[in-house]
Image (cartoon, rainbow over all chains, first blue to last red; front, side, top):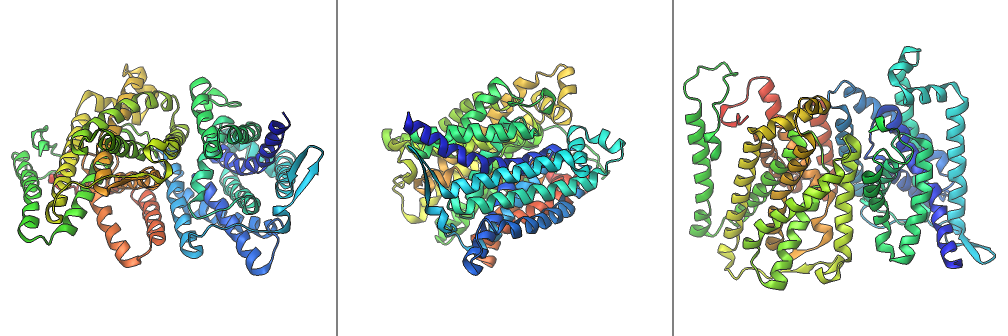
Length: 291
Length: 339
C-alpha cells in the first residue's frame, strides 16, 4: 500500500509537467485548430537551450525559463507568420496543419541533431539528485520543484485567460472563431499571439524536463505521442480536460511502470487512447462536435 | 503495364486526339520490359550491384507510397503510422523463416494478407474519429507495435534477430530481391489504379471531398474507409516482408520508425496525393534526391532537416504535388495521365 502510494506520488509529480506541455498544445489546437506535431520538438529546443545555458554559463535550468520562454515565443510567432498564415485558406486545412508541423518537427530534429549531436543529455543542478523525506514517503526534489513551477505556470496561464482582455479574446476565439471576429476580435493577431504562447509553454516544459529526464534529438517523438494521446483524452481543445487527463495518465503510467515494467509505461497512454476512442471518442471533457 | 487497359485518357489536354492509349501502352510496356531485362546487365558484367540496390529500393517505396495513397490520397485520411505494417510484415516473414524455415519470398504475400487482416480491426477503431484524432491514433498504433516487439523476447526483443542470407553468390544475390520488389511495385500500382477507377475509389474520393454529403448520398462510408485502410496496409506488409530478408536482420528500431512513415507520406505528397502516378513519381524523385543529399551533405541529421524543409516547401507552394500541379496546368505528359 505504501509502495503503491509512493509510486502514485512520483507519477503525480510528473503530471504537473505533462500538464504544462499539453496546455500549450491544447491552446494552439483550441484557437487555430492546429495539431502541432512539432510541439515536443519545440520542447526539445527549450531543453537544449537550457542545457546550453547550464553547461556554458552555469545558469540554473529553472532560472533559464526566463530566457527560454521569450526566445521560444519569438520563434513561435515567426513560425506562425512564415508558415501558417499561408495556409489559412487551404481547403484541407486540418490535415495541412498536421503535415506542416510534422515537417517542421523533422527540420527541428535535424538541426538539433546536427548542432548538438546525438549524445544523450541532461542538466545536473544539485537538486536533480536530491530527495525530500515526508514520513514514509519521499519526493525527489527536482520533481517537486518542477511540479510547483508547473502549477505556477498553469495558474498564470489560467489567470491570464480569465482576467485580461487579451485572454478573454483568446477564449472567445476558442469557443467560436467566426463569432469572435464578428464582435471585433482581431483573430489573426490572437492566433499569432496564441501560437507564440503555446510554443513558449513548450519551451518552459522543456527546461523543466531537462533535469528530470535524459534527452536526445529524436526524443520528441516519444513525448509528442504521449501528449497527443493526452489531449485526445482530454477532449481536444479543453484546457481543464487536458490538465485532468495529464494527472490521471501520468499516475497510471507510473503504476503500470511499477507493476509491469518501465518499458510498458508509455503504452499506458496509447492503450488509454484506443480505449477512449472506442468508448467515448469525444474524450473526457469534449463536446461531440469537436471531433 | 496494366494501365494500358484502362479507360481512354480524357482529352482535357486539348492536343489532337487519335487513340491516346496506344503510345502510352507501348511506352509503359517498354518500360516494364526494360526493367525486367535490367538484371541481365548485372549477370553479364557483375558491376551493377549498386544500381540493382537503388532500383529495388525505389520499387519498394513506389509500392508503399502507392498503397498509402489509397487511404491518404483518395480518402483524404492521413496516416502517419503505416510503417507499423512495414515492421509487422518484416517480422511475420522473418519469424516464419526462423521457426519454420519458410522462405520470405513465399511467405511475403501471407504477411500482406495478415497486415490486411490487422488493418480491419485497427481501422474499425481508428476510423471512429476524423481529422487530427485519426492521425494521432495512427501514430499511437505505430508506437504500440514497436513497444510490443521491443518486449517479445522470442522474436529477439529490442535487440532483434538476424536472418540467414539466401545461398547465392554475391553476383546474383540481389536478383531475386529485385524481381520481388518489382512485382510488388507493379501489383501495388495496379491495385491503386483499379481502386481509383472503381466504385470504391469514387466513394473514397467523395469521402475526401465531404464525408457527410457522401454518407447522405448513400455511400457506405464506414465500410469503404475500413476496406481502404486495410488495403493500404497490404502491400506495405509485403514490402516489409521482403525487405527484412534483404537486410538479413530485424530490429524494432529499424522497422517501426516514424521516419519511414514520413518518407512514404512525403513521397505521396511530392508526387501528388490522390493521383495514381503521383506516388510513383514522388518515390523515384525522393529516392534519387535522398541519395544525392546523403552524398552531398554527408550527414543523416542534415538529411533529415533537408527532408523536412522540402516537405514544408512543397506543402506551402505546391500542395498538389508534381502530378497534381502539372495536371492543373494541363502540362501533364500523357504517359503519366493514369487518372
